[in-house]
Image (cartoon, rainbow, N blue to C red; front, side, top):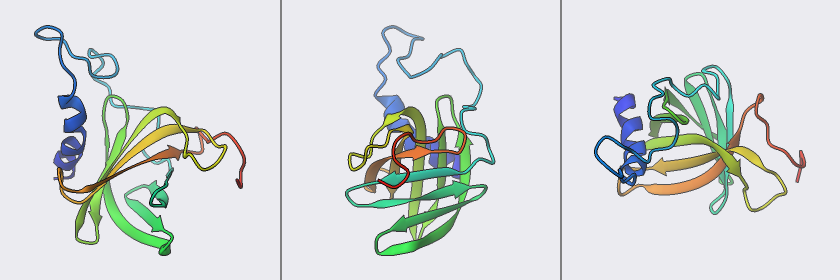
Length: 151
């Protein structure tokens, strides 16, 4: 079920890839590479942040803490992790809504600080197609952000 939800989260991005000829794809990465993304180790904590509205948290193991200014302690949810060809995703339920978050490598700025993050985040809260989409940035201990510790 979670694997299907992960694929549903990523499907719109893949649908935008228009092949030049039959058998070709414009999807990111090497189309011959069948290995899952290894840039974030399975047990490594992923920290994430977003603005407008402000949100953030951490995913580690099978749990994710999602924080907002209204709930600074956060809501803890059980998640499934999926490693695709060019990133990872986390899926679960936030309250009664489906939750899906894709983390992909790429320089990212939160637009509010002088930090640069090594990963971009696309977050969906709610059903595919009608849920709320948010974007943000992420980092890990092995791939930290650069810039001030306390902006």
